[in-house]
Amino acid sequence: MNIENFISDVVRQSVEALYGPLEGEQLQIQKTRKEFEGDYTLVTFPLLRRSRKSPEATATEIGEYMTANVPEIKSFNVIKGFLNLVLDGAFWAKRFEEIFADEKFGEAEPTGRTIMIEYSSPNTNKPLHLGHIRNNLLGYSVAQILKANGHNVMKVNLVNDRGIHICKSMLAWKLYGNGETPESTGMKGDHLVGKYYVEFDKHYKAQIKELMAAGQSEDEAKKNAPVMLQAQEMLRKWEAKDPEVYALWKTMNGWVYKGFDVTYKALGVDFDKVYYESQTYLLGKSLVEEGLQKGVFYRRDDNSVWIDLTGDGLDEKLLLRGDGTSVYMTQDLGTAYRRFEDNKLDDMIYVVGNEQNYHFQVLKLVLKKLGYADWSDHITHLSYGMVELPEGKMKSREGTVVDADDLIADMVATAREISDEMGKLNDCSEEEAQSISNMVGLGALKYFILKVDPKKTMLFDPKESIDFNGNTGPFIQYTHARIRSIMRKAAEAGIDFSGAANVEFLPEEIGLVKAISEYPAIVKLAGDTFSPSVICNYIYELAKSFNGYYHDHSILKEENAEVRKMRIQLADEVSRVISKGMKLMGIDVPERM
View 1 (spheres, rainbow, N blue to C red):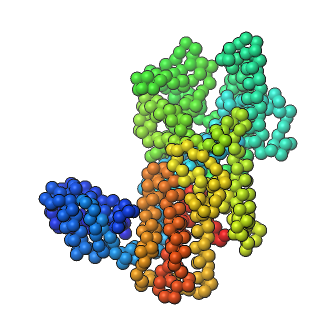
View 2: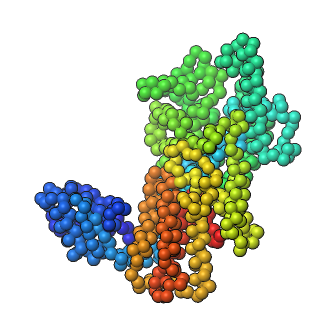
View 3: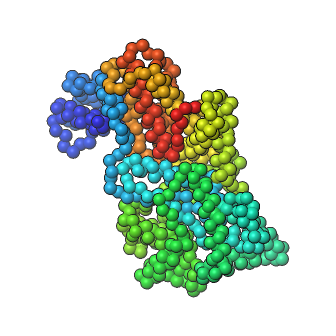
């Protein structure tokens, strides 16, 4: 039963019985605010012209009618023009029976919609860092949430494997690398290539300084620095398929891909398809030619291609450089075209940081001007805030980033250390202890990042994230493990908790049933808003409520067999919802801790 639909139906029937058929009027029904007694609240002000009575009298009249004619309504109270309805315990007991028997509770029916979600989108000139972690975790979680909402979801990665930034690493390795390889150094391939991206920047800055000392302005020095000129020449050679440059590009990218795969596996994220910018930018160039022919774009004297968007309140946007090399917008046009053509998409979601808000605004507008409005209207930029540290922002080219691999390893090590100190792994084998530490460390990292609204810039504090108390992953994981311990003990004692329990629920138990029953609506809200934080905060409140209930009420030692059966079922269902909700965030929950 959908509770909201049930309430809406019985309220409508009651109002129409009192005041006649409603002609298009929308009833305003909402969940009762926590500070008032009640489950659902009817706002009576829109009904006053029908009742011809005061708000309080109208609310009272409807409340009296419902308590007399709707068995599920236990009582009511009126606060000004707001009618608060209280559902009886038998209603919630029946609802709990339905939930407990529903194996697919919280999973929506198929919608037939196909949604592609792009996340990760790394550059092959550096390893993944903390910012990439937020991107990957957010993209993967939103994909899982959209699947739970019944959509057909394609998870894709667009690897930025070409461009001037890639050539910087390649050139630095060629000039200063002395033939180093991942095998010869023992470094992960993405770390080795990232080392030379930093190396390029070091030499570039030194050359700028020299040229400025020789009398050039800073802008002139930046343009004329020898390593920058060499990197630009290398990009031109790559686009011309120069054999030597192309071979080096393949080799170094190969090192990076192997490194990325290790990180993705450790993070627990995956993709259904990987696109490569090197394979899409030429299609983007063909769209630029199409735009020139249609008069949508124009060519400047230096041979570069632009679009004038000043009439739309934006500016002029470069689409092709004067030397014929492409920019990000070029390849994004090509990739969007290919994806919608090949996959018959209903929606396309890009998970990209908020510094690219303008880029996606332009992308949608350019596609629309090219005649692809059907596509551009179904593109969503899932914009998220940056991740900052107590020390401030990270900078890749200066080598001041928090490396993803290092952070994952540190989180797991810290989880092991804290768990050992608290004695939570005393009864575990070494293998099990390490498995739980891995689960808790990653759970702490994922939960701490996903519990923040995606739009907000966030401050990541590793120590705070791994606390076993408060709004953290480990607190929720420990709650799940505690409940699974109850279930094991019930099984060992031979307690049969199958079938409906014929008992009256306590207010705290009704509170837990209410919370559980909200899960499908929470999953829907998270899908509608692309926000895993909605589920995080819901699961935290559920875990907190259960812990309070468990502190005050015995479960296994309850003497009344029917009450004990119901309480075991209730605990089991709480753990199931916790597990399902955490899984939507890519977080595993342990059976024991």
